[in-house]
Image (cartoon, helix red, strand yellow):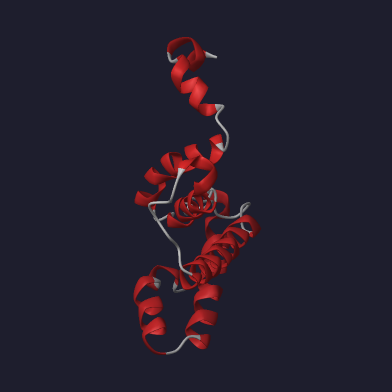
Length: 137
């Protein structure tokens, strides 16, 4: 309501056809700085998909390979989100835990690290080992 009062033209733009398709690339662009390219890319894919209805030939094009890569990335992102949802009572997405659950969280990540080191090979294992020594017990 405040936007409608202060900027009626912007309010009108929000109610154009495909308003969400028009708005989301702008909203998600800032998230790319926080390593969240998937939401932004999805918004751009929708812009291309509906460009004819938005007004002309699209300035961007996603190939079939681009779309497959995006689908794969999105599935992996959902797996990560599901993982953090499953440990939400123990550790928050930003790594924060209560003092009362610190030892339990450290034990959890220590066990997870052991599994990772046992299962991973090559450069993936080397990187994992290099970035997770904090979880050693």
